[in-house]
Length: 302
Ligand SMILES: Cc1cc2nc3c(=O)[nH]c(=O)nc-3n(C[C@H](O)[C@H](O)[C@H](O)COP(=O)(O)OP(=O)(O)OC[C@H]3O[C@@H](n4cnc5c(N)ncnc54)[C@H](O)[C@@H]3O)c2cc1C
Image 1: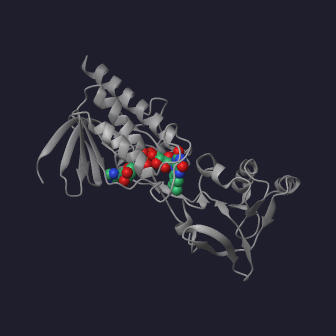
Image 2 (image 1 turned 90 degrees about the vertical axis):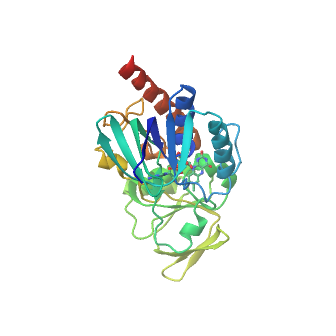
Image 3 (image 1 turned 180 degrees about the vertical axis):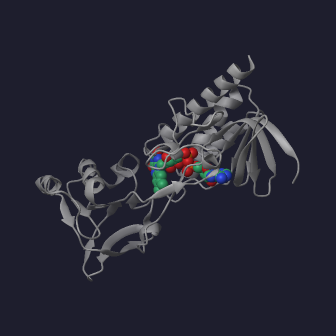
């Protein structure tokens, strides 16, 4: 496709953070394009919690309502496609898509989220978002006081255990192999009656995503109702890196308080910029990115 339609701002990623940025910019009379391929990271979880006015709704209910409200603004256009490439141009940026053409804009906002990499434990992926949980603020209340596990080791396993002890006293840290906890950490966990199990995990047994037990490689098993885990992740979209945006040591896009990346004219918001992954923070970062981007356009043109 050869036509290149021009916009003030292109937002790549049209989930919670991207739609929030779009609303701020659309209401500021900016000509905005949202490119999204419809794969938010929480799509597998049955209910979303801890976002005011939408507590307990499905992720799709929240994003459908958000899209409906953002669609009221004739300043905002949508394209359902994957953005496949991007580059700087004389007037700003060009963005390619798989099948919807190439678009240009003076500014870019990446609200592209992250991709969780499921560990190779049979059953893990099926339970992800239902009984295998990434965040206690999102789902901890629903499994409070239950037989709970943490999949982790070392400092990360220790810190996660300390945190989750707040939601249940029936807690086990599964290190999935030899513990790398320090003596001091081990003693602290024991003091708080947190069990440490070093057996290597074979699989999670579950009923439609609801975990029942962990089966270990040595043939033993233990019953469990919920597991906390933070799998590794990658950026969902590598266009920011193609443009030269820097990442933090943890793999998030580096931004300042105004959600500006390290590349002039490029903003980022939501999960791709922070380890604190919630709908509320994604929406807040989106509105900040939208407003800061608009201010930059005002400064450029006034
Ligand atoms: C299993 C699970 C359960 C969760 N439960 C809760 C909860 O109960 N409460 C809560 O507050 N938070 C919850 N979260 C966290 C919450 O879902 C995220 O913080 C939130 O979705 C982040 O929004 P975002 O817009 O940054 O990214 P996402 O919602 O992940 O959206 C990114 C969007 O960008 C699109 N995209 C990516 N790359 C491209 C590209 N190249 N071209 C076009 N489109 C692209 C994707 O398709 C997607 O639509 C949960 C997360 C997970 C993983």
